Image (tube, rainbow, N blue to C red; front, side, top):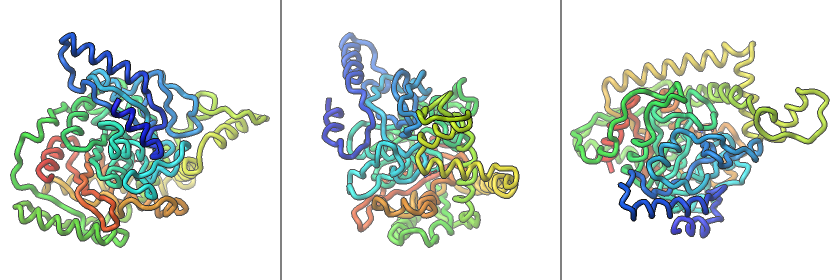
Length: 449
Ligand code: GLN
């Protein structure tokens, strides 16, 4: 009842696109009854969770914030959602986001923008803006998002909360609406690390429905807080901290913080990373290519919006359905992706980008031979104002400069809400460890907070 009231009182933030109020009440009553009857409590007994509108929850609408899927109901639950409800959680509603998770500001949603609760003139970040604001404004205890290039960490950074993207393959993608399949990962928003660790522990692990889910055993992440770590070796990319797009206050805060870590006995070294300028173009070539393929299923026949405009041919019918169903940003990406995959340009763009991705991966492995973690800003600026970047896609894409690295290389990353900007907005520090080293990520992050 508390969270339903909170949601009602904060309607103007536009965080939820649908609330499962009656169902949540019924489930809470059932859980109460079980507790009274002495049934042993499950690990997430009564935990109130909001889910991004890209995750399937059986029998419920799921739209990816797109007109294309305005009347689509999920025929099954995503594995991560199933694991949460099996552990006693209550799913309270679905959360607003950028259409098909494409965006960095939540300005590309068919449901309209989400407002940052700390300053309603500013964006919450994207694409999981609703999931971030739901935790920020106490509209649920924890929430789920998806992170293809930063969509959990960047909004967490803009809203002053914790945002975790696990390793690629750590959480099953079954039931997550695909954007770019070799990048997509389910992520967690929370107010503290312990909650994120608990949720990850329950959702992670192999799944027969997703062949890319990892069989690597799932350790007890939630026990991370109890282990004390000694001095750590941190790396940061010289080019990242010196980048001209980085807000000077963020740079200063980070360098000062590195000094504090050194004083506390840790090693913090700058390493050269000349590939930095290639990572945003590489990310946008590969993800638009994958998106153009993934989104071809929305033809209005198998899935999606069906136009009533008269069509002379099947191709015209598809064109009407897709023209009416998709928003501008999604269309831009389908066109970009089709272009980089086209016969004449495939080698110049797609193959090249794959080669860069391989180099990034190799270089990252070398860094982790010598260091425990990589530190970086989460975003180049704190939350910006509505409209500030929406007319300039390249400026918007540059927002992702610090986050896409972890998705290109498949490593886990967390944004920790550490700092405040003089404009009154929070910003975070991003910590990354090697693949499947979430336990050490939690231990390191815990020791830092
Ligand atoms: N902002 C990035 C993009 O638009 C990341 C999106 C995401 O992680 N889903 O692609």
